[in-house]
Amino acid sequence: GKAIKAAGYSYVSVSDEAVMEDCIQMSDYKTIDFIFGEEKETDLPDKSIRSFFKIFPKKLKEKIEDYCDLGGDLFISGAYLGSAMFATPRDTTIDTRFAREILKYQLETRHAVRNGKVFTADTNFAHMDFEFEFNTKFSKNIYKVEAPDAIVPANKDSAQTILRYKENRFSAGIGYQSNKYDLVLTAFPFETILGEKARILFMQYVLDYLKNEE
Image (cartoon, rainbow, N blue to C red):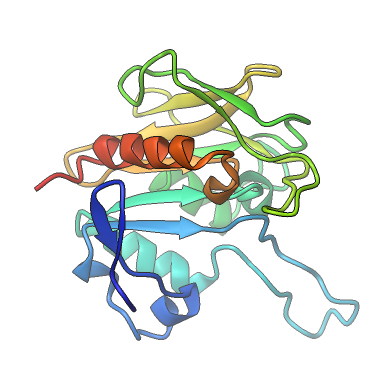
């Protein structure tokens, strides 16, 4: 795709299908951003037909695990990262193993907030006075985020809550840094952050946290 500039870095955009079908090699990129928006698995009336819009299909999980093993860094955002992978916070499945062990998060609660105000919870990520809001109202410019999840670190000794919802202090995002790979995951869609300046600054904080510097 065409290279574009954002927060001082160039990027290309492709679909997750292109990744799964080997049209693009994740290992060619130091940092990858998965934007899931409000995507979540949808069951069809006919149970014999596979469901649609699964956030992490088996092949994509394998690609991500290989990418992390090679030292790649990830920024992942989406309103249903938690509930898409966990039936309950204590759920134990293949999906939850991937979420906990590779992406270092688990579900805290569904339907976490009604408003989209978020503040910094970790100065290692951003300045403590950095606050912003994502869209939770009807708008002609961006979709309304309805009932986003809250996600927490699966292991507080390795990952940290870096963002919290102002409404109730539930965890809105987690960060993970290691000698092998780094992660930022947010329980709200990045593209719904209100204000271009706030989005650019947020992305700069993400890239700095992921140590994406030459």
